[in-house]
Image 1: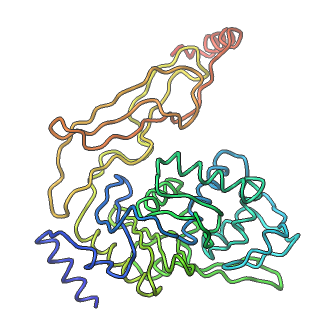
Image 2: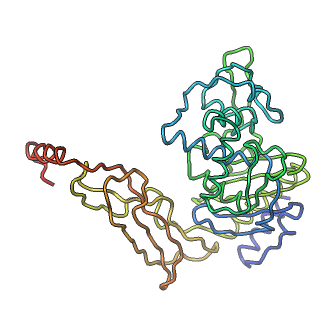
Image 3: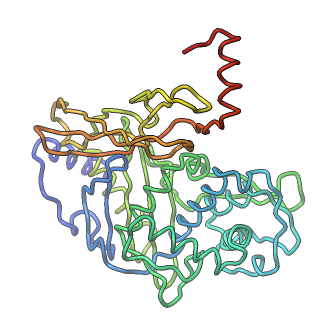
Length: 381
């Protein structure tokens, strides 16, 4: 089998071909292969078909949890007392008990590795006040991402009328989740433990077996219910290129894994990324007056890259920046412009420029003190 895949990859490298769905994921209801930095779709099969997606739903829950961590609303070491409602969730679980205390990090580990419904509902109650309150946040997030073929009725992915997504939407959700880089600290781990140093030590084994045996795989989320069948959002990175593979509606988990690998192999064998600017790279430095800082650094929000056929030479591109009129105060991460890549005048890709730091607007009194302080220290720049 490995020899056949290698031969296939070699032939594709020499003679690029259009691959049909039956060649890569014949047993899947739908699927998609995407390059993460550009968002370009390399392969698709019924990408907009609305289908149940089981626990892949939890990727949106993970996005919201990570956003709350990053904003400081909750912390990894916050201790959460388990509710009876969360403890009674069936399906995949870490067997939480009413009144049991776990940290946010432990609950998130249970969600990411064991796809735990009880841990997901518990975090939903912490952030949304209730599961339904949290589900509203999930549907709001989907709208913010501009996705049109997704709607959630619960936060776990358990089968329910009106709960669905699509391969394309799942790909974009996976891409958004990966923008929160800390997710890989959890999704890449194959085995770990909860309740260490207790009589109820619980062994966690990642439901995504690709992270153990596929080179470069480090996430992302599995799913299985009667209606959704076997699903997988997988990601792997090789030679600086990250791919996202979505496979939905497989009858057998082993076939799901094999067809996901076929997608990833096809991508790594046929395309490459030319990196132009890396995420967080400084692009512009703008002087600021009457601010808590004298200048503001504009950095790339994401990698600025171009997808190319493997084997082709890197090209020279024209790069243009557009800076918005800056008004104080400015928050860290605020969009303040854009960077555009052009090939012979044609736009190839466009990414946001964001502020590296926050800058406050000084009041008149603060401005006087600030000026005096600079005069005393000799810092007149």
